[in-house]
Image (cartoon, rainbow, N blue to C red):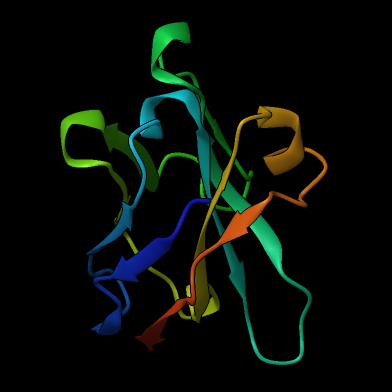
Length: 126
């Protein structure tokens, strides 16, 4: 069982930056692929970014809408995955969810990972 707890959300002006953190429980964090999803009001949850298991080099993947602005990273010593968000836009406003699965494909492209965090709100004002 993996438990995920997000933090770092908040209110920021357009063009600003935020860093989200996701702390994971369990001793096998390094064997999980990790990802971030988001859900805006009235919209379906969508994939944002993912990072593979550490032994495979931590390959990263991004949605086209955030490529070049967001960076996903992981610190296995701290059982934590991060999402650095720069050049934020009002359309980035959403609840952001951390996700984990042993199978990267369950995160992307399938989008149904085994474990989810509770979400953290990000609001970008114009």
